[in-house]
Length: 327
Image (cartoon, rainbow, N blue to C red; front, side, top):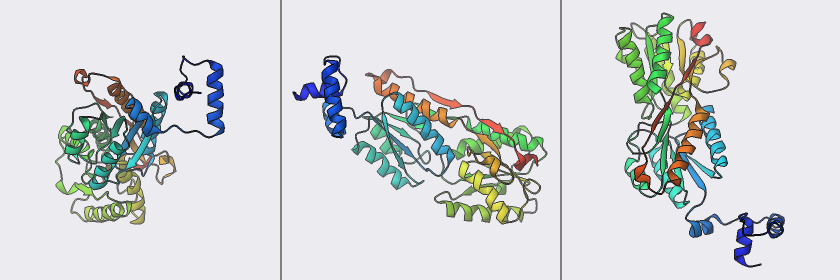
């Protein structure tokens, strides 16, 4: 058979008879034939590959988003390449450049913070579509998919205030793109309920590694409890902070919720197994992943991208109350 006949048979072309298709496809399967992605790219300009760049892969939150992305990507006949930048801007730069080297058709990008590798991202955007997800406070013009961060934090603080926990500390991640909006929700709740802000209650934790985070949180908890007016509640800005905080408090033999009530953003499915069970602000992770892919495919299929109206999609969170605040 000619090269073109084999190619059309492998691509299920209507120009080839079913008998020929079956013959070629069975031969390819028998000999474990795998198409050369780079050769296909040279011919079509496409690899049917989506790159995913995200700052960490340490918990359920990231796993759930990736599951949503892979489900949507498969539905659109795309594969995914995933790279973890480990909250490191140099690794983030390498990951973005690597995606270009792999000739991906588009990139789903969760930046470390609002200033990380912005010049590079803007340069990439000239040739390769990008959609920003999760940490959407990022200065490039494209579709962005995240949640109502300020509202989620506001609702967590309101719950604490409703149960008469008005001295609320907030544990933020240092140089994390989600911190600004979630901190604004904390501020807004204090303003609306006429509670003065205590600067010492706002702490920023080192999230570069789990060991650094745990050491940092332990120091912060000890310092907070030594204040003349210590807090009686803590809200966590991110999954890793919120879930590991219970372990730190247990290590220090601090009773939850008697001494400190705990609530925060967390998507772990193990909340009921923790001691005590953890009150959480839960994000629609699967939807974030699916919508991000759908929006990226929408861009990739547009011939004239200058006519696209960029959307900043913000999905609502839900609050789930358990023993860490209710006792």
